[in-house]
Image 1 (cartoon, rainbow, N blue to C red):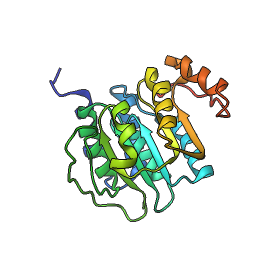
Image 2 (tube, one colour; image 1 turned 120 degrees about the vertical axis):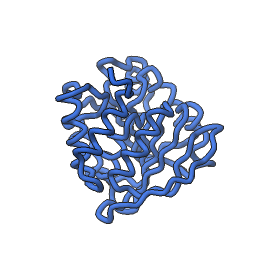
Image 3 (tube, rainbow, N blue to C red; image 1 turned 90 degrees about the horizontal axis):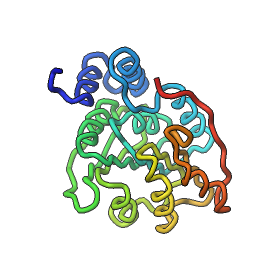
Image 4 (cartoon, rainbow, N blue to C red; image 1 turned 60 degrees about the vertical axis):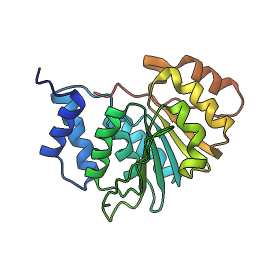
Length: 225
């Protein structure tokens, strides 16, 4: 009713209540907003613990997130990475990417460049980073099927050893195949995909189970909030 888009209302709440430079507090503030005010399509605390556990087990150096949305997942991932690691996060919608950029900056992660994806003009935004979190985050705005083929040449991602998919479920299989085609998955890479049962990504699941390239494991969890 205020005329302010939901994503901007959420960010205004973060500015008012979150501790700058504290990724954990920013995530919990996101959670409070979603529980008490308006639902956001974020990973949430329950699934977030699964992500954190997998990051701790695998200690990846190059992480790719498909589906930045408002930056919740990017902050969660970056906070769980070892020093010197790098996160590439792809925001499909420019309006979401604009908010996510502010959220990532608010969390205190250092950034060298913010790109606008395929065909876009690279930005020059530089963040100041919180010293205790030494992962770098690169935000790329653009359609995933246009960004993925450019990741190596334009963004310096030779191969990812951890991929987190949390965008449109009907794109999961297409984008996995693109990652394979462009040889962007490191040997032994982990591909973590959210909500494959509900709303569901049946073609992605079927391919992952039957193509012979992957060992599949389902992590049961409740919906975000």
